[in-house]
Image 1 (cartoon, rainbow, N blue to C red):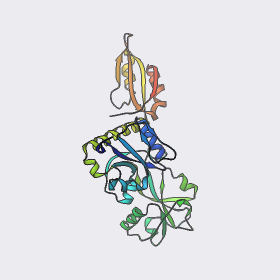
Image 2 (cartoon, one colour; image 1 turned 180 degrees about the vertical axis):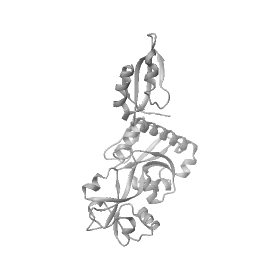
Image 3 (cartoon, rainbow, N blue to C red; image 1 turned 90 degrees about the horizontal axis):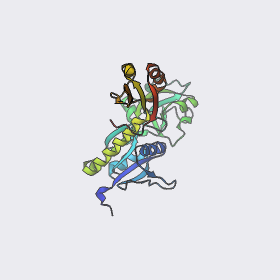
Amino acid sequence: MKAKSKVLKLGLPKGSLQESTLKLFRKAGYHISVSSRSYYPVFEDTQIESMLIRAQEMARYVESGILDCGLTGYDWIMEQAADVRQVAELNYAKEGLRPVRWVIAVPNDSKIKSVRDLNGKRIATELVGFTKRYLKSKNVKAEIDFSWGATEVKPPHLADAIVELTETGTSLRANNLRIVETILESSTRFISNKKAWQDRWKQQKMENIVMLLKGALAAEEKVGLKMNVSKKDLRRVMSLLPAMHSPTISALSDAGWYDLDVVLDERIICDLIPKLKKAGASGIVEYQLTKVIP
């Protein structure tokens, strides 16, 4: 039987973040089995016990100590004003690696142009608590209704405006809505119960998880590049490489030739490889990365 102190209780977000989170953990090296009917994913690492919890509820379960730690959005931490330790920011969302936004949106033909114009209006949102505090800070009094879903369709008949989550704005535009203001930017956070963080074993376990998750995220936008370069072309090729650090250079068995190995941003590859070839590089090989640990 495992000692209780050697188990870390981890909350994984169920819902929109679930698949991207599980994918990230697997890329970080964790083997996880998930049954379609179970709320308890099983880690091959027996020191981790996990549970799927909706991101909206995660912070309060971590704050209360039911869970030692978990992953949730910064927005839901703020919504619940949860007293938790934010261990790390992990920049990923449902559809990409950028933060998401909570925005005030109104119909395209609405006379509402600014937050001040919301005085006396009805607003529908799932982010009720934070929205109330935000409007209060702007000295705006409005009626805030909790929205159970399909928030974009509520204006203009059921609400004058909405506060809604968006990554790209596509859904808002499709429903003939325009953004008035962004009230909160949110990214995924790894959070810890404050008492659990004082446990040295649990803290080390959490820090290890975060390090591997960050390494997997860093690798999402990076690739490795290997190439052969002659001594006479080495300086010219080196000048083209915007490496994280200096590239690794190894002498080949053929006299006067070197192997260069470098990590760089994937977005520049299409432009860079032809330049490297023209500068004298040969045998260029691009390869995917699993983790990049600084």
